[in-house]
Image (cartoon, rainbow, N blue to C red):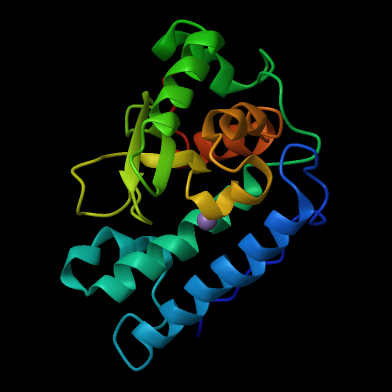
Length: 210
Ligand code: MN
């Protein structure tokens, strides 16, 4: 059973002007499509075929660079498309558990936003910024290089990613050139807090301390 490139949950131009249609089309079709094809080629005929991507990433240190880079690229972009929406942005409402958790763990939404933006801004070269939830429902922010993510057993990071921002130049260069901070700012206009809350609630289903 090969991994499949998921359709975008909205049109290529749906996130404009925050993310332009051409970037979305190339990013989804060429970049995510490429990771998907290369992941399938890397696992073809191996015991990894048929495994869940999360399970492959959890023991990725046992496998070669092709599985690490393309497995991460496959998973990371699947998450990325879903945690954005043309109806997104703003702050999570007080009815959403994630809102209470952000206030508890960062002090305020503003503090969370500043810390996440700083993590994304300071990734050197290509990588991702993440908001993760640990087994006790505590939130934390981190970043990873290349297509690594916190699910992998290679970076000494723990937690389930529930929000991620791609800061590879391919994610923003056509529209923003070298202005990564402007792209990061625009990302906050399209975050799908319903999806982030869903992922927060599902990460430790039934074990919430809130
Ligand atoms: Mn990307």
